[in-house]
Length: 365
Ligand code: FAD
Image (cartoon, rainbow, N blue to C red):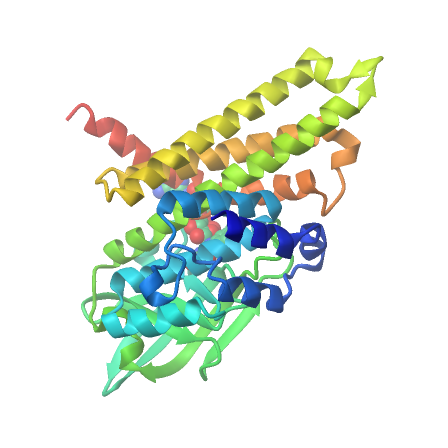
């Protein structure tokens, strides 16, 4: 893990702000990291991956989050795609597709549609059998990393259930349209994807059969939630470092900002945020590694809490740096925009709260 973290630090250097302003990460950087297996580091060694545990991959993801949330978002997408293939693919699909994803091919995941945001049961994309082929039609929106991807894991209706289909972005009928000027994670390659009678070999359907849509999305999202939660830990750590450094160095009213109690209180709250989010992520990754039945709710809890803490910590960091933090592309200004989006994706604040309320109610049944 240390070696992969060092590689990330080296590749990002001080470029995250420029990538944010440009709205893009150089493709060769992503391919290099992909070919080193950093972007989906949990893929087992037998499929060419690094075989990291959930906990180690989580800390690696947090490290990426301290450097650049756009890059961390690309990691989340690649990891979620790899996990979906690992979990639902046949042996042959796993061998071929996971090897591609650890050799530098890039992947994205497409659930959301214009009428299917929080309510994924409303997914309308269709996957229809036609001899040895399947034909896909639909409209996906806001798919992170699609602008860079070689392959999309597309979720659609299939037979009497659902399927995830591996769709090459170069296949005829696929149009990838980058989202113009996203609020945050501006270099994460968000795009809408049009699928117009996309004909593919039936072997592109993961597992080759239909499965329940709920199962498919829950399993993919569990990886995504954990990854986003760890990414939020990274945002909090970056904000805490920036705020503490500034609060020590900058003096007002004859003493460092850190010695003004109202500023120190912000720092204390950020520290609590970092510790709390880290512990919840460690617990959820522990559940992942031990295949605990508690995993699903632990990942929702970690994501919900970490995203909320990241949004508050980023706001506090901008407050402490004040004019020095109010520069577009700068660490805390970026974090402020990026963190807000973490409260929307992989289950918004409200959707997480609904799930957690169910857990609360189970205590008294
Ligand atoms: P809506 O579902 O329209 O919700 C609007 C508001 O209403 C939200 O606050 C929501 O919480 C609330 N709400 C909705 N239903 C309820 C309810 N029952 N009770 C209470 N409140 C409710 N999608 C992908 O498929 N792949 C990706 O890689 C991907 N990446 C993304 C990256 C970013 C930065 C963003 C912003 C989005 C991304 N998405 C992606 C889409 C994302 O999953 C959706 O935006 C998210 O699920 C919310 O859907 P929506 O935006 O349509 O909001």
